[in-house]
Length: 330
Image (cartoon, rainbow, N blue to C red; front, side, top):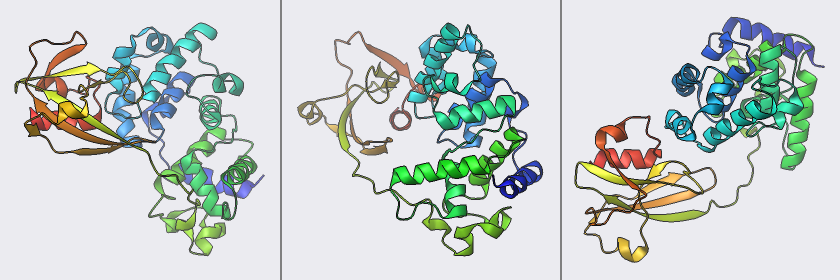
């Protein structure tokens, strides 16, 4: 075990780390799980107001499990990566059913729940119990990859295995909660992706990437396949006061309110073409071509009319690019 690395990080965390975040006030595994899921691929400053609203509305996992999915999606609206919200709700229901509403802390139990991987499970257990658990989220990967110059000439699987081994060797035998927060905070605030603040880093003296001025070469970037594209012709059926939306029931944006889709020939008949939108999902690039159309005489049962004021509120789950478009059109 690399005790020197851990000792320096723990000392740095106590002095400079983020120690007053709202979820840090509790060691309840439910609270820490909620925060961990929200923080995935999302900045702390964005998460805080959502976390506060969720805890106020769903103070226990039972409250979350018993809530309608639509209410959960409404509270999540605007935070992005909506599959997290669906897994959040599904996970709460499983905890209610399988663990009698008591959020588990055993790693095997945590990893068996929807939306909780190995690193997330370790972060939850460490935060709840102070037990040392190796974690390897994106921020930690960046810290370790740079510190040990891990990844060059290796396959992604080999790199992942070495990073996990390094994470385990550096995890201390005590102060697990503080160390886990320290290594995540270091990656989030100092060892950042594009402009690392190496002069402020407590482990820069033996960071191999820093010593060789190669920080930006790590983590080694994966060769990515071209992102597939999908074209969406969307209809803005409006009279200037209201617009008709329908709730998507499949694939991306599932459970969110969006615009009805048109066939190519239908879109070509429109007299008013609105500016095109390009929106990147995790594994898909959407090219959105909206057109304004008059409200048809016969309204499908699945459609629902919304005013601009309703669309403005974050309580209505609408994809970000669609909300932005509608606020400009209405």
